[in-house]
Figure 1 (tube, chains in turn brown, red):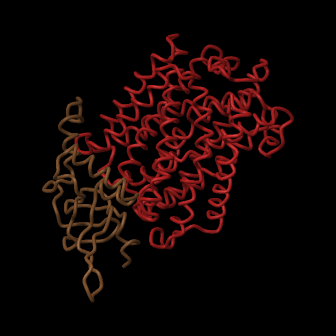
Figure 2 (spheres, one colour; figure 1 turned 30 degrees about the vertical axis):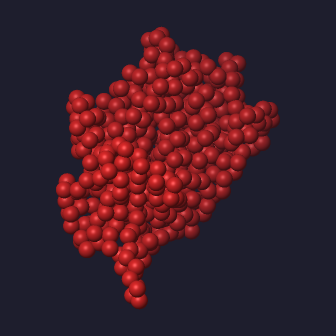
Figure 3 (tube, helix red, strand yellow; figure 1 turned 180 degrees about the horizontal axis):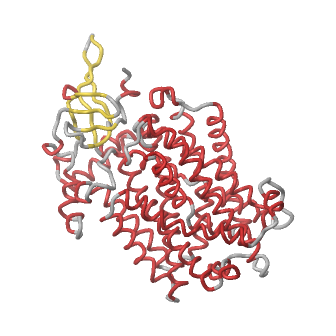
Length: 119
Length: 406
């Protein structure tokens, strides 16, 4: 398996097969004298903006912190040991409703989309 | 039997998706000014889109990825962002033009200026997306699109010199208005080879849960559906050449001239048929374009998507099509000439082609996605041809726009 080819930018789903995002970045741990080890994946706008460059990453983090508080100033992380299956999608053994990943979608549902009749 | 039904539905759908304000306007302009001489551009564009649509469907059926998913996964986000932005922009302009087309049809029918119809048209489209399912939109609206077949009937009833029509399928050099000729050719190609068509098609294949057993169906739908669509465009061109040209109208720069096309053949009903064709074709295309914007964003960022879900279950996805539709109606509501916008956005579509078509060459030859169903020699030759054509179009579009645009 090659990390960049087979993991990065793949669709991520939770254990209920809900699409929660793409693998926007991979977090690896450097260990002295041993090969690096993947410990988590990151997803969300901050992780994505960092790939475009350090400056867009900083701006996005600052914007996210201003819009939704300090808790959202870092990308969402999912520990690699939660991975369950790597196929068309990568499935993690988590429940997205128990994370902050969909906070913005929930905000939209409550404040915008849900208020329009017929939603 | 089930397959046959599936194929005919698919053909109907793609006919509905193929003919929109761009193909109607460019074919009518080309016919009026150059007679049958530009039929080759419609034929060439149709052959290219057949190949691309077949590949998009095959890719989705075998790999269970849409084209947008595939581009992001295979090339990474930093490469994906360019086709993403280009397609979002081009789709937005084309969507605006389609809303303009519906608005013009409404103006022709009621006499109330098109500007007033832009927002109601967008609202109606939004309502269908908000409440409807993918099946309803795909099958319902495109079945109505069959009314555009009236152009083919009209073309046959006009008894054109079929020999001259055949001569028109071979590219030839213009005798007058050289810059305009090539600009028209570029616009026709842009109207036929629309990225939204094949990207939408791959999303549709995932929505309809296609797998490898659909490969034959896919080939039939791509081939027959796009050919029928191309035939209707040729019909528009022939009618424009014989009717508008004969009445001394060579410059179609005002949409009020367009309904004249069918009146000599069908009388008052010709007017009704024209208005209905324009309204339905543009409305159908507007639905597909708005959905495609939402598909593209949702697939690009990995959000939950699906037209069959309720808006509250995919708020990000539904918000994208909602915003897109209403923003796209704004330029028309402010009075931007829909015909000018149409021709401009068709040329821009052509110029954006390399960004969306180059990935096909890699995705459709990658064992990890399509395995044994990867491209053969002919399909690869076709992709390379479209890419080359796309690069030429990208380079010549802007100068031609300046010298040959209307």
